[in-house]
Length: 328
Image 1: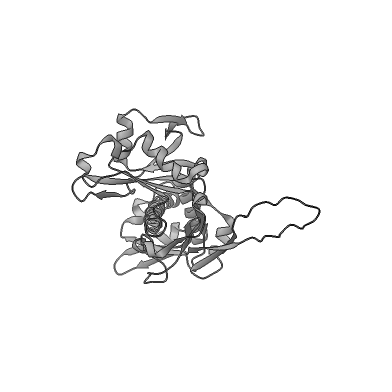
Image 2: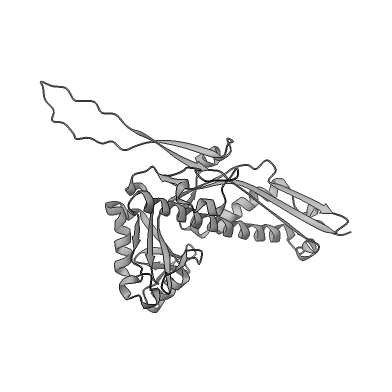
């Protein structure tokens, strides 16, 4: 008897395992940049596609001199509203020989590993598009106070001053002023990483198992990801975007899709299908979702990359994100 997808996929086991495995293999989660948050899990499961997250602003005003002839003047505390969007995504797979190709010693584990890797890549794509929109909003509305751009349009003729180096990174981190100590990691394109390698500026530290394989630069953990934007200069060459992250810069919450996992079979075509749906949050803390230009019930990656869909609600120093643009 032929083994079918429905024989090896147990929906109530499959969906939670995929979520757990996706988190486990995420570089951004392992670096502490994306932090799973139980409170965001709860918010993501309450229903609705917009998640309101009110917060208290910091205390301000001057202190007062105590006197036996006067009273202190009471101050208040302000409030703000952060807002996240619920991402609703799905994917289906269907091939005639899928069950056969996964019929080894652990077919469930093989399928789970493939699907988890898929969602991990998709989440990273979504995060990069989200950052594109967040910083586009910053450039449009906040005088680029979180963006350091030392690139030129004639990238092929860029000097060292236009490329990544000690000064470039230090100047970028200074966008957060005395809060720059919150920054822990640097995400860069492989071209930028290669430049640092050629300059012999990459150092390696041991991981949790004692293996020396975690690259660092100026004390920041380095994440090499070719999803980091590489935009053609108007004259020549490229302008590369790198990101400095603080711990927990992006909050992660997992919701509940009504039917997260389904299997099906088209007997006449001899096709087996695996369908996977997800509801989740990946929210840059302190930058509220506006939904100003969204066609569907949930945004696409392209819509997440639009400035009009974001608005910063935290003070600059409380945003744990900085953008650096160089020619390599």
